[in-house]
Image (tube, one colour):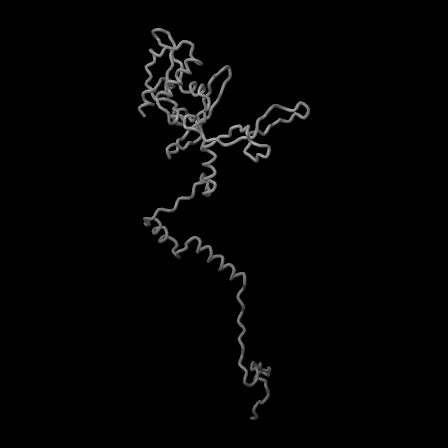
Length: 276
């Protein structure tokens, strides 16, 4: 029986020839991976690393967190404001009493500064303020020109202490919110008071004796919760001695007190200031 040399099989159908010729191998084409699937795997990996950076998940991660003896770092407070060293130095210079400007009549016309600006009223036509620049010079502030408030914020329920006095039919106000350097120490809650009459009005207060109904002067004291005197002086003048306070007492009795009687004044505050 003759051999079937044709490319047909027994069923008479042509046989597929998958060969690529001599010396060539068959190449298998693999299906390419979808880019979307790769992106999903990458995103999932990032999520796992963020939620569990050490590669521990589930119950072991919870146990490890509870068994750890290192407390977590607290979040930074939102009330903190960071300053540079330059900003701190400038702020300390502004809030510290050191020098003051005094009118300098001897300055020439070519004076470059500093100046004191004084308001002399309004222009009737334009309505603008009239300001005159007066030639001035810097003068060192003396310790006896500084008064310190000896109370605290808790005692007077104010962040800044601001008293007023009535002197020569005019009310004057002072604010104790500055620093002053004395004997290489920084003194807090200070105020510049140049007039000794104002110092006397702040330093002393008027009291009336219950038996004789006579008025006398006493160093102003810090009040208690019920308004009673505590014996602790409210103010002091920086760097002065007993004679300076006695001079202020005479000024107070002259300008603020009509009937002065020093024999009735048993001043505890003066003893405490002199003793300190």
